[in-house]
Image (cartoon, rainbow, N blue to C red):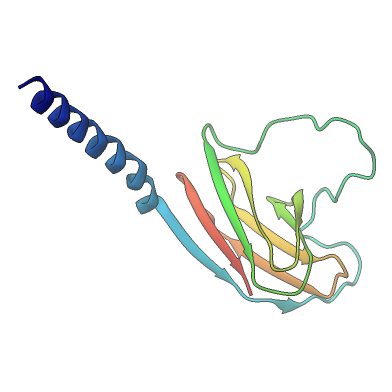
Length: 137
């Protein structure tokens, strides 16, 4: 009898935890970004702060908004891409690589620029409650 009760309890707990882990997948949204030719002529309005040139500690917060949003980046190109969230450099995505950026829930733009400054990827109007997947093509 004790074995039956123990087995039933374990099965119920496994079901509850397995359901909670998979429930987050429903909040993911896929955004496909196509490369455009970048025409560099003066300052780029999409970039407010470029990649730091020193090892000075970064000040400020992780981004606008009260919560945390995870932007998952998937690079399906042969370009190495600098990533900007709301105009601020957040990292570099290797060719054919994947990475993620933790931001605030209030960010609105995702911008990518090849390190050779020949291609760019833009997305405006991001609203993130938990997870967004950005695919760079």
